[in-house]
Length: 620
Image (tube, rainbow, N blue to C red; front, side, top):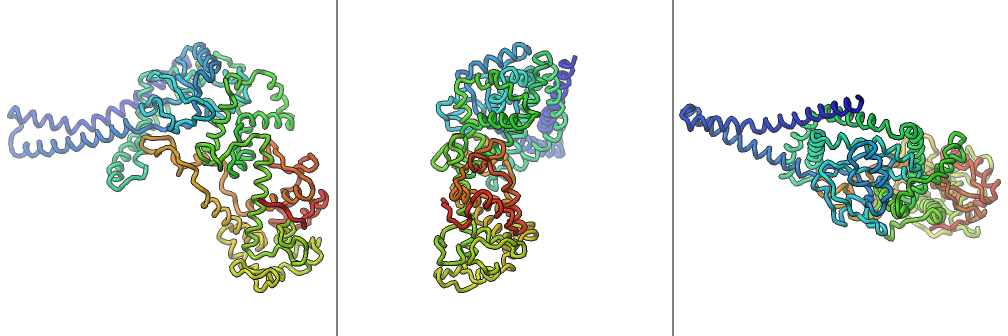
């Protein structure tokens, strides 16, 4: 009863959508019908006279204009390419076991099998209709789907008019077992039954066409096309508003019917598998934001993100007693065994994830190279820290901060951690003294004798003041109000300088490569201007930038003076290893220096680990 009730509700709502389409067609044909009646009345001598002749001319012209406008709108709606999710196509020859499992599931559910399977770098699964003519077999250079990664074939099988594509979240294949994946996909595959109904399929095509027409009308155009498409967009939005409720209820009925039909297949296992869905989502989000994002910012993209999810969730099960039971599942067959070449497909989805979540190029290149997990500490963590430390010292140079208070000190021109700590130290909060015995001046006296960046002088004869604390506050007020109020003037100005320097570097960076030709009308999926489609994090504030750069400088000093090494924590990202053990409690000590100007907690931490802040460090 549940299946029939849901399907019947979906069909009734689909008919309501189609009635709206019929009414729109009737409105477009009404002037022509009136004109035909007037012409027929004149030819039969029933409607004669000057008034009727004028009415015939007016209605004839109006009918032609309305029909031309309706034809233009219908043409835009029919030819506009509906939005398609960016995915990685999985050819049947590259995953015969996966196709066999899905077809067997469809047979058990007594519904049509999906026409094809694709993967998406997200923790979700759905059916997607790609029956629009523009979604037919695409040439190799079209970027509707990421292709061409080490022999991954973009071929698609020919499909029927109402056969959707099954899109599977790639983390599911690597984390879930075969039985769990089948249970999770059961209600999704069951949706092919209602989707095959002609009324539901026609209603969906109509709604997707209207949505695509709105996108076409909103795309930037010339003045002539913009004025013409403005009317098309207005009509499309009006029709979308009219059928919005019916379309939503139709989809709700389809989902209800699919869920009811799937009750008979692996129902008990599906309850357990739903727990893995939430766990996979948490692990995937943590992996992207803590591990992948630092690599993407360095121009490297991890090529085994899906395998990293397994490592991250395994680490979570080791740390969290609540997740202990999940590790025992790893002895069962993983769903990625259903793929012939899981490594190749993992690489393709990892590249697509970098493009969607970070806006990286569509193809690998010299400035956008893949990185394996074994190389991650050296290629990403070490380079990130040293790059941030170099940027920090460049900003200090711009602010006129001397590298060493004593020019005769060895390595006085080399970058040191002591320079950063001394600059950020608030004299009122500093009760532990300076690192160098010769540094007996107060902060204001020291900066009053620092050379300016605009008028450089020989290092042996500093002459004029660089910046005063009041000027520091003025510099930071526009860029980071919160930081300027809570932190010392030195911290505020340094944070403002880092924000400006990072913005200049991003502006000078080369474009991410040519994206597919145009999003709006008909040609492709997205354009470079809209990337990333799903940014992982908002832009970092000035305080966060300053804390990250100071942390990077501390880690560089630890690696160069205390033998520490860069490491990778699957849940927290880049980490510092001292004697093979993860260094803890660094973040609150850095924040104490950045926000309060108090260097005592950080200095005590450095002394405990044997880190020499006065020693020079190696930068990139």
